[in-house]
Length: 404
Figure 1 (cartoon, rainbow, N blue to C red):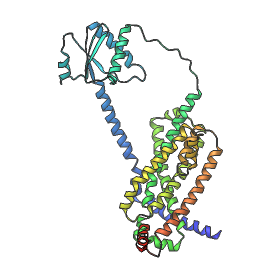
Figure 2: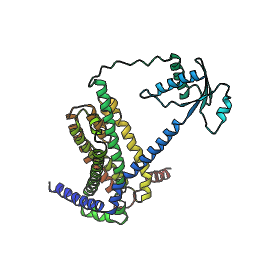
Figure 3: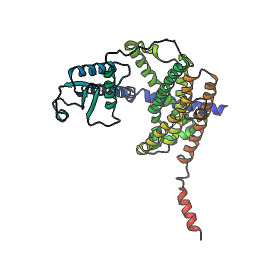
């Protein structure tokens, strides 16, 4: 008992040292400002998208038709473009009979995307278009609608209900995917720093002093929980700013969010717990992998496969959304590294609480096991006083040379 208390005390001392050195530094301020750059990029690309949309509104389709035919076609175009969910219909540019089609397509002053020759319900389209081009379908809809004449589009009678099982399921799937995405982004953004945690200590031999003073398990536990506390501090600041911004500028957004099956208070609590478990599980693995690196270049080499592995975990956890009770969903929930993501989706889709208690205990067991394994791996491969271990292929070659 006393031995375990000594390990925890040593881990607490290391965690407090690392947390204080990280949070009370100038670099942490830049870390807190980090999410502003994706937001600025989103605003920038949003402006580019709006510019592209405004440019698409200027796309024109030249129509060679009599005034009466053009009026019917333009009215059909307006009715179709006003339908909810309708794609962007090109603006129609009237041209008199006898206009040369090819000269219209070659003109650069007021360019048109194609030329529609329309008369008495008969139409031909000239331009760089093919059978599967969306413009062909839009023109076909406009011509068919123009043939109907002035008959209005019939209204559909509505019998509104407050909720249906299908609508509830779809809404909860949206919440499940959003919860998974948020959990994945936070873990991806914050856990990668653990790859380089021990480089400085290894380069200036501090790690050897620490390992001589305290157990290696305490070093790993302290550093892992210090980084978890640092990430939670950053998340708390970001969430406070985001919620304040939404309350000021979009207060009605919270009322339209799909309610998870387990309820918002428990869903948010489970989100925090699953983030902690995800960070500890993936962070323990990253800490063990990064501890084998000696330079920043080696860490950069490890970053790409590590990131791809995290993406693979998210893809595995996605099975829990479409079929949480099926074999794939159960496998995603049982595999420790993908379990937090799968159970986060389950919280949005299923109102049962006991599976989450079992999942948290299961994940906590794997956190302890992984810390034990990576500490033993680090002690054997890095702190081995007998010098570098002989590579297996060199041993095999020497054995082969010794054979007759």
